[in-house]
Amino acid sequence: MDILLDPFTVSFVRRALVAGLLVSVLCALVGVWVVLRGMAFLSEAVSHGMLPGVAIAYLTGANLFVGAAASAGLMVLGVAWVARRTALTEDTGIGLLFVGMLALGVVIVSRAQSFAVDLTSFLFGDVLSASTGDLTWLACAAVVALVVSVAAHRPFTALVVDERAAHVMGLRPRLAHVTLLALVVLAVVASFRIVGTLLVFGLLVAPSATALLLRRSIPASIAFATLAGWSATVLGLLVSWHASTAAGATIAGIAVLQFFAVLLATRVARSRRSSDHPVVPSGPPSATFT
Image (tube, rainbow, N blue to C red; front, side, top):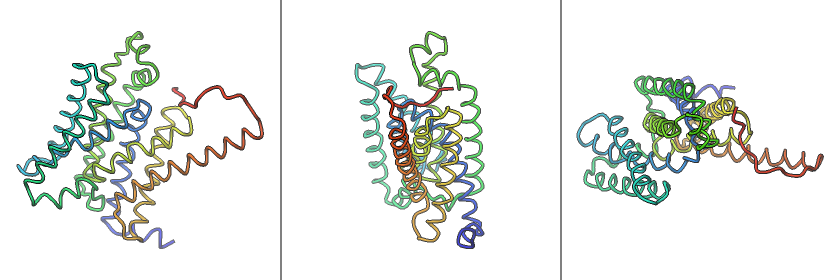
């Protein structure tokens, strides 16, 4: 039993645990909608698109969160502008801005040799260095995401089911899409300090994708995604402590492993049910939107 409890007797590990739990809540509230809406690539691009803003903020002594938010917001606006002003798909705009913002960030970083160590932290995070201020910021971001998700549940649901129907019903799908983009920026900006830009994508998508494999309602999927994130956090910190691995990467890696474990389990269960009670397939599985 001591092998499970000993790591959490250390203060910085306890703060890392709380930080991971808060990040899991925030990412679950946003991630389920992201997966259902098919915005995973955009989330990845936003996480990398923050680099120029963070680099400029670091070099000028400004607040890193402000720089990250400004850069991420500019990236989202750029993607929307390309999609609206050209005949190209949104994916093309995401790809262009993804590469462009990342290249700009690397160029800025290359001009400042002192930024090299901090770049590693930016990419991979440092959950073990979470401070009280970080926890407060994450808690506030999680509360905002919860309030917005509850208030916009109906428009979000209509948006992911049928955007045209949402427009006919007067649910303003364009505003719902913009609001969802804002939640993505909030989740990425709030979490990058803890798990890094490369790994926040894992916690944003993996637990939510795992939950949606079970084909439950959206609120139930959010709850399950939260639990999956919590278990990945606890297991990740334990493995990191005993195996001396990077905590943030270990947490994100376990979250991805959980997805494949649940996928395999659901496939086996369906195979057994099919062999016991053969039925004619009615179509691909989908989440229940209730």
